[in-house]
Length: 250
View 1 (cartoon, rainbow, N blue to C red):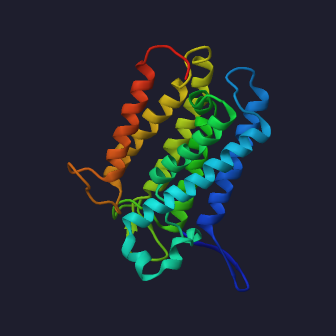
View 2 (view 1 turned 135 degrees about the vertical axis):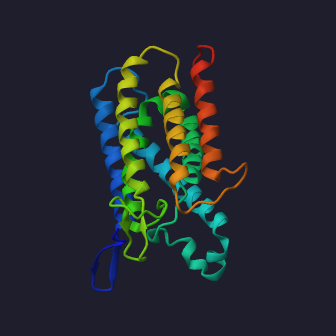
View 3 (view 1 turned 90 degrees about the vertical axis):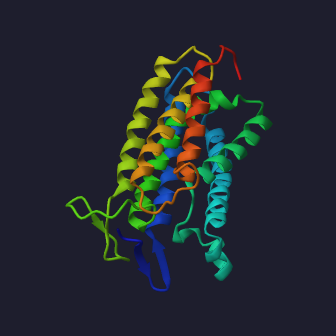
Protein backbone atom coordinates (compact mmCIF):
# COMPACT_ATOMS: atom_id res chain seq x y z
CA UNK A 1 0.00 0.00 0.00
CA UNK A 2 1.40 3.33 -1.08
CA UNK A 3 -1.12 6.22 -0.89
CA UNK A 4 1.27 8.91 -2.20
CA UNK A 5 2.62 8.30 -5.70
CA UNK A 6 5.18 11.09 -5.68
CA UNK A 7 5.70 14.74 -4.77
CA UNK A 8 6.75 17.62 -7.00
CA UNK A 9 7.75 20.33 -4.60
CA UNK A 10 4.56 21.49 -2.87
CA UNK A 11 2.38 19.34 -5.15
CA UNK A 12 1.42 15.85 -3.95
CA UNK A 13 0.22 13.27 -6.48
CA UNK A 14 -1.93 10.65 -4.78
CA UNK A 15 -1.91 7.09 -6.10
CA UNK A 16 -5.68 6.75 -5.71
CA UNK A 17 -6.36 9.81 -7.83
CA UNK A 18 -3.83 8.80 -10.48
CA UNK A 19 -5.36 5.34 -10.81
CA UNK A 20 -8.86 6.78 -10.99
CA UNK A 21 -7.74 8.88 -13.96
CA UNK A 22 -6.11 5.79 -15.49
CA UNK A 23 -9.31 3.79 -14.95
CA UNK A 24 -11.42 6.28 -16.89
CA UNK A 25 -8.82 6.73 -19.64
CA UNK A 26 -8.36 2.98 -20.12
CA UNK A 27 -12.06 2.14 -20.13
CA UNK A 28 -12.85 4.95 -22.60
CA UNK A 29 -9.99 3.98 -24.93
CA UNK A 30 -10.95 0.30 -24.94
CA UNK A 31 -14.65 1.10 -25.40
CA UNK A 32 -13.88 3.32 -28.41
CA UNK A 33 -11.54 0.70 -29.92
CA UNK A 34 -14.17 -1.98 -29.40
CA UNK A 35 -16.89 0.15 -31.01
CA UNK A 36 -14.72 0.85 -34.05
CA UNK A 37 -13.88 -2.82 -34.63
CA UNK A 38 -17.19 -4.52 -33.89
CA UNK A 39 -19.99 -4.72 -36.46
CA UNK A 40 -22.96 -5.73 -34.29
CA UNK A 41 -24.45 -4.47 -31.06
CA UNK A 42 -22.91 -1.00 -31.39
CA UNK A 43 -25.06 1.92 -30.27
CA UNK A 44 -22.36 4.53 -29.64
CA UNK A 45 -19.07 5.28 -31.36
CA UNK A 46 -16.17 7.68 -30.94
CA UNK A 47 -17.07 11.04 -29.41
CA UNK A 48 -20.49 9.77 -28.32
CA UNK A 49 -18.78 7.25 -26.04
CA UNK A 50 -16.55 9.98 -24.61
CA UNK A 51 -19.62 12.15 -24.00
CA UNK A 52 -21.50 9.31 -22.32
CA UNK A 53 -18.59 8.35 -20.09
CA UNK A 54 -18.06 12.01 -19.17
CA UNK A 55 -21.68 12.26 -18.05
CA UNK A 56 -21.41 8.97 -16.24
CA UNK A 57 -18.16 10.03 -14.59
CA UNK A 58 -19.67 13.26 -13.26
CA UNK A 59 -22.68 11.44 -11.89
CA UNK A 60 -20.52 8.64 -10.56
CA UNK A 61 -18.12 10.89 -8.67
CA UNK A 62 -20.99 12.95 -7.26
CA UNK A 63 -23.01 9.91 -6.24
CA UNK A 64 -20.03 8.04 -4.83
CA UNK A 65 -18.88 11.01 -2.79
CA UNK A 66 -22.38 11.83 -1.59
CA UNK A 67 -22.99 8.32 -0.26
CA UNK A 68 -19.53 8.30 1.36
CA UNK A 69 -20.35 11.61 3.05
CA UNK A 70 -23.71 10.28 4.31
CA UNK A 71 -22.05 7.17 5.75
CA UNK A 72 -19.17 9.16 7.30
CA UNK A 73 -20.87 12.45 8.16
CA UNK A 74 -18.88 13.17 11.38
CA UNK A 75 -15.70 13.43 9.27
CA UNK A 76 -17.22 16.10 7.05
CA UNK A 77 -18.75 18.03 9.92
CA UNK A 78 -15.28 18.32 11.42
CA UNK A 79 -13.65 19.29 8.10
CA UNK A 80 -16.13 20.37 5.36
CA UNK A 81 -13.27 20.81 2.86
CA UNK A 82 -12.89 17.03 2.78
CA UNK A 83 -16.17 16.84 0.87
CA UNK A 84 -14.38 17.90 -2.32
CA UNK A 85 -11.00 16.30 -1.54
CA UNK A 86 -11.71 13.14 -3.53
CA UNK A 87 -7.99 12.67 -4.22
CA UNK A 88 -7.74 11.48 -0.61
CA UNK A 89 -10.05 8.59 -1.45
CA UNK A 90 -13.58 8.11 -0.26
CA UNK A 91 -15.93 7.11 -3.07
CA UNK A 92 -18.57 4.48 -2.40
CA UNK A 93 -18.89 2.33 -5.51
CA UNK A 94 -22.62 1.72 -5.33
CA UNK A 95 -23.32 5.42 -4.82
CA UNK A 96 -21.17 6.13 -7.86
CA UNK A 97 -22.84 3.37 -9.85
CA UNK A 98 -26.33 4.73 -9.18
CA UNK A 99 -25.23 8.32 -9.86
CA UNK A 100 -23.51 7.28 -13.08
CA UNK A 101 -26.53 5.30 -14.27
CA UNK A 102 -28.80 8.27 -13.63
CA UNK A 103 -26.73 10.80 -15.56
CA UNK A 104 -26.12 8.27 -18.35
CA UNK A 105 -29.87 7.68 -18.61
CA UNK A 106 -30.41 11.43 -18.96
CA UNK A 107 -27.76 11.61 -21.70
CA UNK A 108 -29.14 8.66 -23.65
CA UNK A 109 -32.72 9.83 -23.32
CA UNK A 110 -31.69 13.17 -24.78
CA UNK A 111 -30.13 11.37 -27.75
CA UNK A 112 -33.09 9.02 -28.19
CA UNK A 113 -30.90 5.94 -27.62
CA UNK A 114 -31.65 2.66 -25.86
CA UNK A 115 -30.35 2.54 -22.30
CA UNK A 116 -30.19 -1.26 -22.20
CA UNK A 117 -28.57 -1.66 -25.62
CA UNK A 118 -25.93 0.87 -24.60
CA UNK A 119 -25.48 -0.99 -21.33
CA UNK A 120 -24.78 -4.17 -23.30
CA UNK A 121 -22.10 -2.34 -25.26
CA UNK A 122 -20.23 -0.71 -22.37
CA UNK A 123 -20.77 -3.16 -19.49
CA UNK A 124 -17.39 -4.91 -19.99
CA UNK A 125 -15.60 -1.59 -19.77
CA UNK A 126 -17.40 -0.60 -16.59
CA UNK A 127 -15.94 -3.76 -15.05
CA UNK A 128 -12.51 -2.96 -16.52
CA UNK A 129 -12.42 0.57 -15.12
CA UNK A 130 -13.71 -0.64 -11.76
CA UNK A 131 -10.90 -3.20 -11.58
CA UNK A 132 -8.27 -0.47 -11.98
CA UNK A 133 -10.09 1.63 -9.41
CA UNK A 134 -9.92 -1.23 -6.91
CA UNK A 135 -6.15 -1.34 -7.37
CA UNK A 136 -6.26 2.34 -6.42
CA UNK A 137 -8.17 1.38 -3.26
CA UNK A 138 -5.45 -1.15 -2.44
CA UNK A 139 -2.69 1.42 -2.88
CA UNK A 140 -4.65 3.93 -0.81
CA UNK A 141 -5.31 1.44 2.01
CA UNK A 142 -9.09 1.86 1.92
CA UNK A 143 -11.77 -0.80 1.38
CA UNK A 144 -9.40 -3.28 3.03
CA UNK A 145 -10.08 -6.85 4.07
CA UNK A 146 -10.09 -8.43 7.48
CA UNK A 147 -6.89 -8.61 9.55
CA UNK A 148 -4.71 -11.48 8.33
CA UNK A 149 -1.70 -13.03 10.05
CA UNK A 150 -0.64 -15.39 7.24
CA UNK A 151 1.70 -14.71 4.33
CA UNK A 152 -1.23 -13.30 2.36
CA UNK A 153 -1.63 -10.38 4.75
CA UNK A 154 -0.49 -6.96 3.49
CA UNK A 155 0.64 -4.20 5.80
CA UNK A 156 -0.44 -0.62 5.20
CA UNK A 157 1.94 2.35 5.41
CA UNK A 158 -0.60 3.85 7.81
CA UNK A 159 -1.01 0.90 10.17
CA UNK A 160 0.94 -1.94 11.78
CA UNK A 161 -1.94 -4.33 11.10
CA UNK A 162 -1.77 -6.73 8.16
CA UNK A 163 -4.94 -7.02 6.10
CA UNK A 164 -6.33 -9.44 3.54
CA UNK A 165 -5.83 -7.71 0.14
CA UNK A 166 -9.50 -8.03 -0.72
CA UNK A 167 -9.21 -5.08 -3.14
CA UNK A 168 -6.91 -7.09 -5.41
CA UNK A 169 -9.19 -10.12 -5.18
CA UNK A 170 -12.10 -7.96 -6.30
CA UNK A 171 -9.99 -6.45 -9.09
CA UNK A 172 -9.23 -9.95 -10.39
CA UNK A 173 -12.92 -10.89 -10.22
CA UNK A 174 -13.79 -7.77 -12.21
CA UNK A 175 -11.23 -8.52 -14.91
CA UNK A 176 -12.63 -12.04 -15.26
CA UNK A 177 -16.12 -10.55 -15.45
CA UNK A 178 -14.94 -8.14 -18.17
CA UNK A 179 -13.63 -11.08 -20.21
CA UNK A 180 -16.87 -13.01 -19.73
CA UNK A 181 -19.01 -10.03 -20.77
CA UNK A 182 -16.98 -9.49 -23.95
CA UNK A 183 -17.59 -13.12 -24.90
CA UNK A 184 -21.27 -12.76 -23.99
CA UNK A 185 -21.66 -9.92 -26.47
CA UNK A 186 -21.02 -12.43 -29.26
CA UNK A 187 -23.30 -15.11 -27.82
CA UNK A 188 -26.14 -12.66 -27.13
CA UNK A 189 -26.02 -10.96 -30.55
CA UNK A 190 -29.51 -10.62 -32.02
CA UNK A 191 -31.24 -11.24 -28.69
CA UNK A 192 -33.28 -8.66 -26.70
CA UNK A 193 -31.35 -5.66 -25.42
CA UNK A 194 -30.12 -5.77 -21.86
CA UNK A 195 -28.93 -9.35 -21.56
CA UNK A 196 -25.21 -8.56 -21.38
CA UNK A 197 -25.87 -5.72 -18.96
CA UNK A 198 -28.00 -8.12 -16.93
CA UNK A 199 -25.08 -10.54 -16.72
CA UNK A 200 -22.95 -7.69 -15.44
CA UNK A 201 -25.49 -6.96 -12.70
CA UNK A 202 -25.71 -10.60 -11.67
CA UNK A 203 -21.97 -11.21 -11.96
CA UNK A 204 -20.78 -8.18 -10.06
CA UNK A 205 -23.63 -8.23 -7.56
CA UNK A 206 -22.96 -11.88 -6.74
CA UNK A 207 -19.20 -11.43 -6.48
CA UNK A 208 -19.52 -8.33 -4.31
CA UNK A 209 -21.99 -10.06 -2.00
CA UNK A 210 -19.46 -12.83 -1.32
CA UNK A 211 -16.45 -10.51 -1.10
CA UNK A 212 -18.16 -8.41 1.55
CA UNK A 213 -17.88 -11.31 4.02
CA UNK A 214 -14.11 -10.74 3.98
CA UNK A 215 -14.14 -6.94 4.20
CA UNK A 216 -12.66 -5.48 7.35
CA UNK A 217 -14.14 -1.98 7.14
CA UNK A 218 -17.87 -2.74 6.94
CA UNK A 219 -20.45 -3.27 9.67
CA UNK A 220 -23.84 -5.01 9.44
CA UNK A 221 -26.62 -2.71 8.27
CA UNK A 222 -29.67 -4.99 8.38
CA UNK A 223 -30.39 -8.73 8.57
CA UNK A 224 -26.71 -9.24 9.57
CA UNK A 225 -25.70 -8.02 6.11
CA UNK A 226 -23.77 -4.90 5.14
CA UNK A 227 -25.30 -2.12 3.03
CA UNK A 228 -23.22 -3.18 -0.04
CA UNK A 229 -24.46 -6.74 0.38
CA UNK A 230 -28.08 -5.63 0.43
CA UNK A 231 -27.45 -3.45 -2.62
CA UNK A 232 -25.76 -6.40 -4.33
CA UNK A 233 -28.89 -8.50 -3.84
CA UNK A 234 -30.94 -5.77 -5.52
CA UNK A 235 -28.53 -5.78 -8.48
CA UNK A 236 -28.70 -9.56 -8.78
CA UNK A 237 -32.51 -9.46 -8.67
CA UNK A 238 -32.62 -6.75 -11.34
CA UNK A 239 -30.25 -8.74 -13.53
CA UNK A 240 -32.31 -11.91 -13.20
CA UNK A 241 -35.48 -10.01 -14.11
CA UNK A 242 -33.79 -8.67 -17.25
CA UNK A 243 -32.66 -12.16 -18.23
CA UNK A 244 -36.06 -13.82 -17.83
CA UNK A 245 -38.27 -11.00 -19.09
CA UNK A 246 -40.28 -11.41 -22.26
CA UNK A 247 -38.40 -10.49 -25.44
CA UNK A 248 -38.83 -6.84 -26.32
CA UNK A 249 -36.67 -3.84 -27.05
CA UNK A 250 -36.11 -1.20 -24.36
